[in-house]
Length: 396
View 1 (spheres, one colour):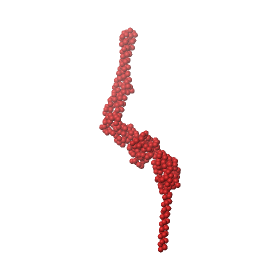
View 2 (cartoon, one colour):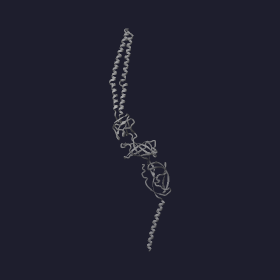
View 3 (cartoon, rainbow, N blue to C red):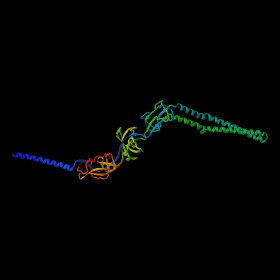
View 4 (tube, rainbow, N blue to C red):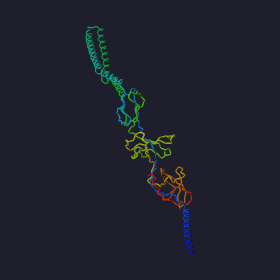
């Protein structure tokens, strides 16, 4: 009987000891507080970035139209075709313009081959008549000096000479106007040039190097000035248009570096530069349009393609960095964090510097080696920190 009673007592004692140990361990854990995630902050590189999506949008758009009214004879390009300056795009029927050119050419040819030679012959004839009249006047002056003719006959000779001189001068003036480079030739040359210019307007050529984006005309269509027939996006000016949340506008500036990828080519990373900031906010979307100029050749991009953009607005080579999930009650550049000191939670006010997507710079309130919580806890409570590495901030 006694041995059995002693065995039960030992078992009971062991159970009591285990219970006391468990209660002590539980009490110790309660005294030490719960285990919460946190980490020790340190210095590391930080970049402040703005992330957005946008579209490929060439701002140099050549809208091709006709300077004259006419009917389209032929279209030589379509969407997607690449063109160079001077390439023929469209042709209008040009029968009327051709006729005007031929008429002007004929008039100029008539001047050089007929009218001018006739005027030269007329001048020679007028000169001969004047010479004869002058000789006759001289002869009669001699006779008058000898008193062999009357004064009336002398006056007649002088009048004939004056009349012949007037005829010669008039013909000379006419010939001068018909001379090479003279007024008549200049007028006919201008008339021909105008006719040729009107004819040239029936052949519509590209003024830029680029890609045909749209066409709004087909053969036999009537075209008029002011109507856009083709749109060509210049290859010399390809921009990325990005609507950025107005909350991020204050960090943006012209000249900032950006990187982007097209959704259609995610494996290709392109460099770009902020080239323009819109002066007004789109109130319907709460965004500001930002234009990026590509620094790389990107012939594969097409107008309207969607791209993902990361703009670097500021950077620090070394900064005291915390992840944004530890920041509480953010108000401007002020926030609060839960710091663990001597295993107790303290609510600390901090001053923020650069603000990144995932992490922020602390410029006042914390120091290297401080431990911060990424979970909620009451100030003054005891906690145990399950330390983890701050991890990649995604900002480097």
